[in-house]
Image 1 (tube, rainbow, N blue to C red):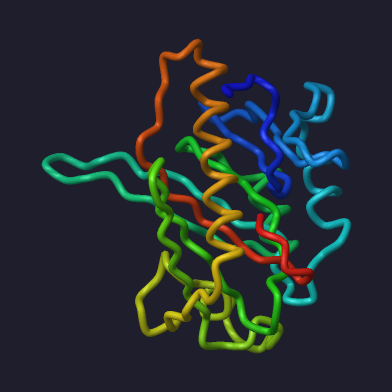
Image 2: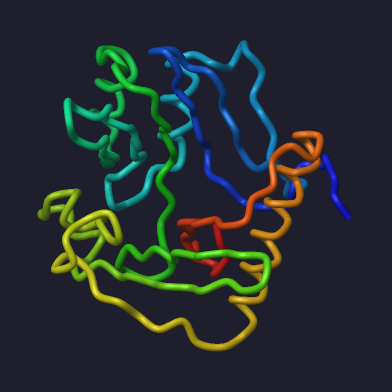
Length: 209
């Protein structure tokens, strides 16, 4: 059944920027549902403190995903930046947010290499792909980008890895179906998602985010 109750999914602290301003801050609460921070928390000081409170030993605390507008006769592009604490501070307090974007807290993966699971969902089936970065995430002598990049970078930075078993694909399919049903419910049946691509990460305990 369709439900306007928040779906039970895990997302790290996620700040949405619109028109150069902080618009929303989403997170997964202790009861497992996605919630939104109040307007009093939507400030640079609170974001910086929360994102750096349990910083990864990799030195990466966040990444920023933004959309570059299309140039004349061309297409727009998506830009992903990984940020350490000093870079996050510069981003929050000094940098103008020219384009709309999403700032998300970095989570350590399961294992010593950054890995992303991509789920391609339809109501009938979900196909999973996994890529693992070639370099050790916690080798801070290396550039952040070279340690963290997976699907969003050149193939030589990462390798494909199989997804074995049926339990994880079934769980991801159920989660994505819940997101689609929730979107339909809260839009008053105006929005029906027929295809979806999700980028997920397995945390140190093997939970998908």
